[in-house]
Length: 440
Ligand code: ASP
Image (cartoon, rainbow, N blue to C red; front, top):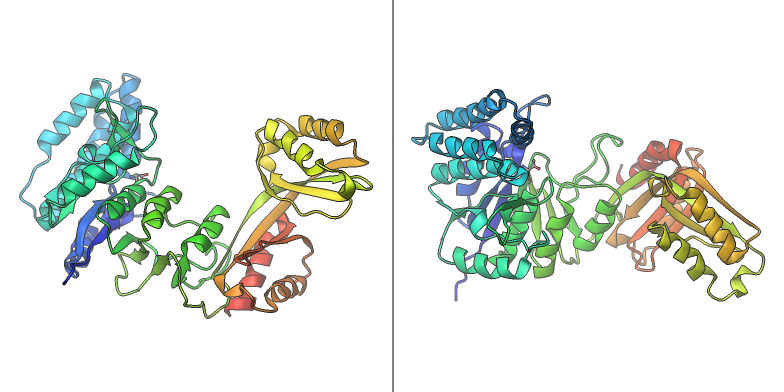
């Protein structure tokens, strides 16, 4: 039996910033007939100082709630959309929609409603331009009363509804509450809508079209022209995103990961580039051993010293309980026989530094407890490191050769990552040293 393949394609704000970008999007969609379900963002920035439609909508909402005239901002929004319609030569008008939105804004429609209209209007134009059906996300994406996403109901209704449409455009970013008001996902949430739709139609692939040619091996603000990762597993991606590397909204990973659907990050401005494939698992090895590097500054180390600590049952638990009571989560626990170190984000200690030191003193009666700030962590991630000899040695040598002191090393037993702790001021240099060692 021949089973037709289905791709869900999501286009970000820069991919739909003006009529020229809409044309690229249409060419991409029509180049592959399995690209059947399309999720657009609201038009984003056309140039660095430009304004995103979503930001303009939030400003409109703010102006309306303060009783100010919304016209100057609202007209910027309608001009953008009208410019796109004219540039595409479409025979359509959004006048009626504008009136409805303006009326709602002036009559206390919610903030989420206001923000969601960017995706709504963008999807109306795109569906007209493509000749695809339009399905309002409010009818198929649902939230619970407490504001959490209602995945079961959504999956059921969405799957059923889309089975009746060969092709459709569904606006990203929002859905509806049980009382029929509009609610949005967090900023960047159209990625989440795309993933939810991919899961509901059991897509073969979720393509996420953006303005970069994939997930980069390192932060381009630190490493010059880093290579694009061709294949990455969900687990590796999670490690790198946790350390700050992102192209996709974090929450968009779960629906597709759960369903075992791969994601392909692609570039609307360079459709020939294959981008990055994010897959549940793969036997393919990266040619560089490591898959990527990411890191963050701003960590602190709490060091507790006590003779014979290792023979004291429950020592670690008591320390961690103090952190838990202060709502501080820990990142790593590199420890010696008579020392225990806890790495935490410095920002988490802001209001409870002293309480934590005092709390640890009273439950462990140590020789000393002190907190040192200014630690940066770098995660070197790669499925290729498993049972590969010498990777840690190469990382440490590369860093040492630049005269950088390593303050902490942590390797998970999964051998998927090695975490290096260095001084904040050595962060960029260490990132470059590791990248150069493996990738150049
Ligand atoms: N337009 C929304 C935002 O700017 C959602 C998105 O683009 O994914 O955050």
